[in-house]
Length: 140
Image (cartoon, rainbow, N blue to C red; front, top):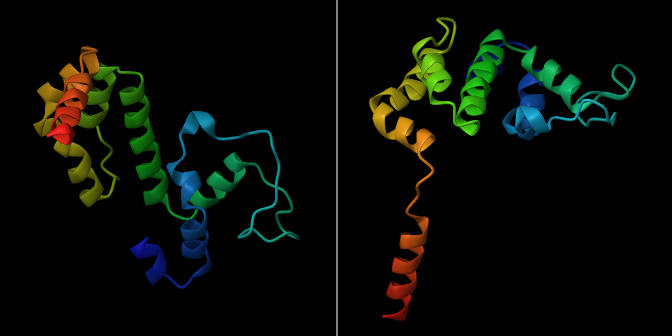
């Protein structure tokens, strides 16, 4: 975002800022069929766009943003599917064109590899025990 702001074109950072929810939305839930008008994309040039078309226009602003988006959501899909092998394979093979700060943030998962791997493999959770403890503490 800082790189886009420092460039001469000020319209794209504003578009990204106003439509940030599309960038954070799950890829499987992005609508490809419903056309609607978008506030940042003017009507004469782009009268109706789907969410996927608007997302493509936003990602077209920066190649670094596009690479980061695809890397993040590939990891998120592997995590959601609880596929620990592909999750850590993707982490070990992060693209060289990925922003260095972002790559370091993602590689923090590697320092907790054993715990993350176990959380993806085993369906166990301590949320019921924690709920009981919270209930006991509120009764005190």
